[in-house]
Image (cartoon, rainbow, N blue to C red; front, top):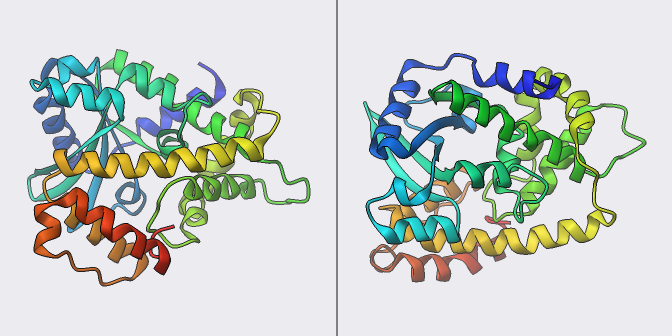
Length: 288
């Protein structure tokens, strides 16, 4: 393996709370033989707080048709990846996103048309379910994510702290999605585990593909597509995620300090409810 892959593999193998592993196994079981790997990531991984939180997982499957008994779910996952589902196990709550092995590998790389996957897996994650073959494929895909971030982050020659490049990169990715988090949240990602990013810097730069000639143009496109895709995923989640609009309000209130209350008609027609809610949130700055 490359030095970058070695670091990623070691991070993926670090232990987690047994309840996380148990939930991951239950998620995999829900999709049968199509399940290949379950990855744990996000704020609950960083803080190690599980109770009363919403845990974040990615389920990697062999292919979408094998993962679902309903053909429309496979089609939705292929056209607007990923599908996202709520999950509960042993007193913990979670949501998990579903990607095929092929899509996961593609969306961790510089060829991805949105930042959503590689931005998340440039951060630490854990492989909490899967065999050796799944681990090898996960390492190969995830190692592409920090290299992509380095390739697409403009170099500031005046910066003296090598971690500033990670902070700038994550700030750019936050601007390429509709996010409820505070503007300083992207920098705090690095501050949670600065030693990890310090170890990762040189190997990620060495593995980075050649950057596009016009990074400003690339990021303008990523912002346009990312915000459109966020809306499309939100609309799709209203069909796959029971109570999805309530989860959206909970997350925005938690991160933006707002006091959004969802009305009964918005629960009855969640797509319309989200569409009517979004412009007000953008105007108020709750969602950026």
